[in-house]
Image 1: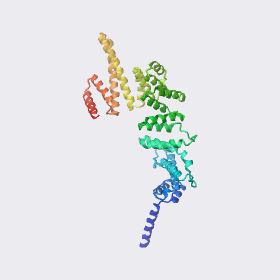
Image 2 (image 1 turned 180 degrees about the vertical axis):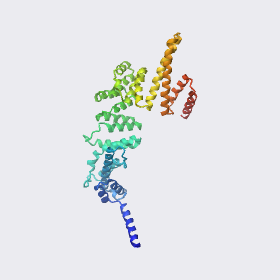
Image 3 (image 1 turned 45 degrees about the horizontal axis):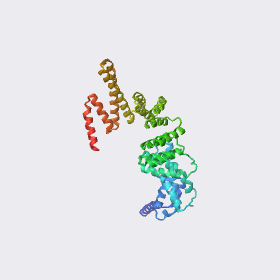
Image 4 (image 1 turned 90 degrees about the vertical axis):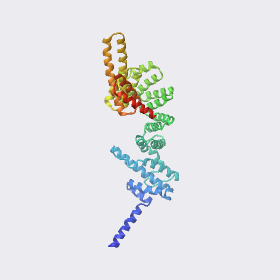
Length: 396
């Protein structure tokens, strides 16, 4: 009995050791049974093996296993947004493995498996999704590398089976912009347009980059393309008005601005952009109306809160100056209602800036405006605000 127990223990140990050995046939069998997780476990052992890692077949097995594992995982996530991707790097691993297999043997094949020439042009969709996931997770270097491989795969197709309409170039360009590689970002935003992009953000980011270097010709060219490909997009129309403000052609800017159907604008970013133009034109009342519409959508948007604070502050100032002028002229009765309006808007400005400060407690521009408001209100908060500004400035 004791001998039997020892034999069983030894058998268990031997089986366990055998399970940890690199074996192409075992990896293939798990692949054939569509047990891609177990197949990956075995094939990754093969890749670490000194002899097996030199075989093109090993890399082809790995490429196919990773490819189908990635496809299954992303298919599950399509069904359930909460599905947790267990092997997020498999699209990149599959791509690299197919290239390695082809490098070792350009004619490598295996029964029931994709060849490198068939697989590499198909991988762009998985690489694109993986790259965007990394971008969202703020893994910018990884996103850049993944999207580069996705673009390489995408461009292997004369006519991609699933056109991305510029989106892979857009996300790659945005990643480059975050990484401060602005020239290559410009090139890839332009490639997105060539690839039939209908994403207004492509045009807006490109315009913003051209504005940074005062390239008016490139700005107008981008706007012109935007009008052509997105004829009814309000963001392009707003960008055109902004362009004329930027080039100091205020007559043309106002002509476009005041023809915009702003009552139909619902997107919060569009509302912010067009309200900025009304602020540029000193039409603070119209800017306030638009920004309050955005505020009703999202009361925690820093830009909305800040811009509302600015518009209310300017409206308060305008009424304050008019009231003082009337008072100097001896028309106290006419000055009093304007003073009340000024006080009301100053209070509103204070409230919006304080909400903005709650979101970004160390924002010096907000603190400095609040300091000016507290002086006018003779508020006890002035001293603590001044102290905080001094502390932040001393940290610079």
